[in-house]
Image 1 (cartoon, rainbow, N blue to C red):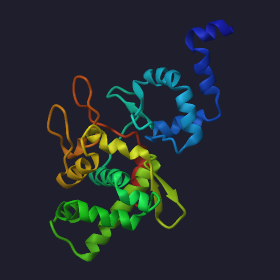
Image 2 (tube, rainbow, N blue to C red):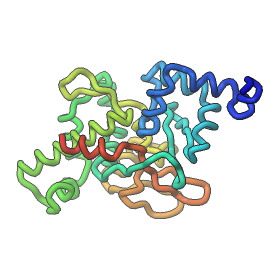
Image 3 (cartoon, helix red, strand yellow):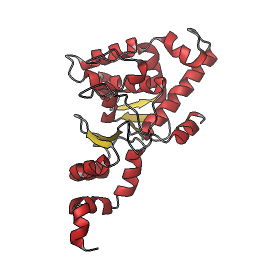
Image 4 (tube, one colour):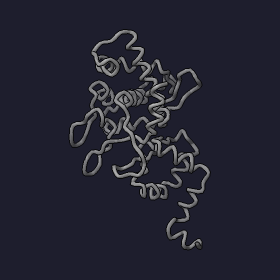
Amino acid sequence: MSLTNIEEFMPEKLAKAIANPLFPALDNALRSGRHVSSEDLDNHAYLIEFEKELAMFYRRYNAELVRAPEGFLYLRPRSTSLIGRSILSEIDMLVGKVLCFLYLSPERLAHEGIFTNQELFDELLVLADEQKLMKLVTNRASGSDLDREKLFDKVKTSLRRLRRLGMLIPIGENGKFRISESVFRFGADVRTGDDVREAQLRLIRDGEAVVHQQPSSQSSLLDDVDTNNQEELEMQQDVEQAVQESNI
């Protein structure tokens, strides 16, 4: 097949993008739900350079390459997408909202942007309704110290999952991390508020999201508002890998 015939099916710049050595691993990461922020210098620069061509490429899979207002990029599959999807759990989304709150807080500057698993957990207990949190572990509104340890284990599992999705950057091996701008995926509905930090705090306390058309349930806290309806946001994760993580 001649070069001319090839270009009829694949534009030259798209062929160049796919031939780039960064593409295989990055393509796999995007399909697994990873968010690529400016901290990931090479991959982010690559996506910006070939954004138009790769958007066309993923459209064939009924998926959309999205660049958020904060600059990070991710792949959003439609309901008819050929790319597999799974839904984040309730605790995953709640942890994500707290991460977004911390990203907006003065404490982030005071800590030089670095937090620990324990600090995140303590903040979660302060900001969220502890009775609701305990129900995630025990189905009761109160719990013992052992139940609190189980909750902490669930939070750490969520942090590992969110790290794999590009929401935070690990620092060393002592449970420290830096929060990525990608956590704004959990704050899409408060971007235009007068006080986004206060709005995010309200979402955490109420367990609700600000929506434009219809009431939101916990399972739609990360939803993006579509022109005709509000689609359920589904992070593209490897389900088996997520299950393995939850057992760590």
